[in-house]
Image (cartoon, rainbow, N blue to C red; front, side, top):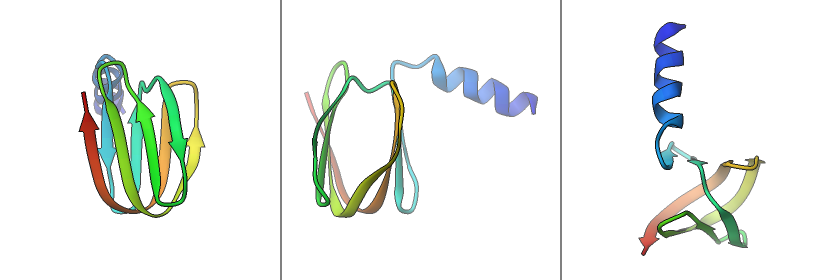
Length: 80
């Protein structure tokens, strides 16, 4: 478990991170959920805005700094 703990410590020391899986997006250290619909989600980070487009998008888990989005992800864009 030491490798897992080291990796977790490394990731949480970053300003932010975004993990993309087959039908999930994991976000860490976002500031604000700007908008939410089943086809579009906008999330504000410290230095950019992330726009996610797709189908059947929904938030599966949400915490103060973390979010897990599930659905068919078709596009992700960063806006500074």
